[in-house]
Image (cartoon, rainbow, N blue to C red; front, side, top):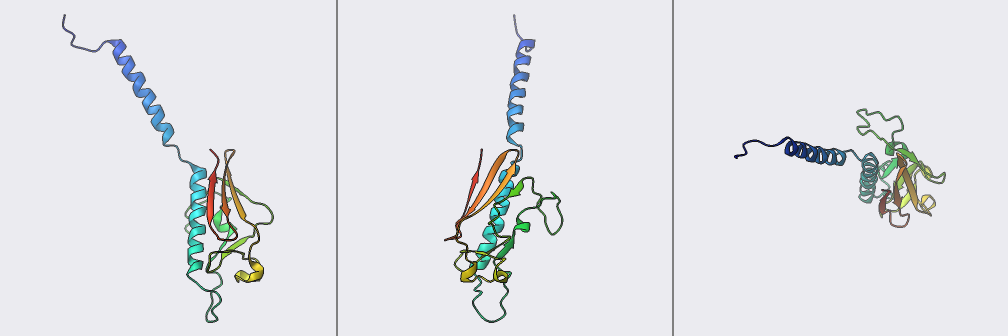
Length: 160
């Protein structure tokens, strides 16, 4: 007897295998909002730091003190809106301790300064004395950016 078609059992097995594979594929394409938010903030901080390292604020002619500084408001968007000035939508919530500055500045060496002191001037009195922690939370998971106050290096830690 010649077999010219698939049996119903074989077709059901193929459909089950395709269903399992598509379920795995769909779950792997879910957006990772927390990781995206932390990486966006990391990129903005690194961009600000590199601008500051190329701009010496100690020179006396035509100093722009806003170069090398970024506001905490620019690093998070609590409304979740996307505008032309803020093209990225945040999904996670920002939280920090009360000692964190509202404006983070970097000097020519990449060290961290409190921009709210001395109007964004990177003076010895505005130099940070402890590491800064910027924490973002999304669906009970935390992503932290740790800024080393001595070197200005930024590390990310994302809870899995």
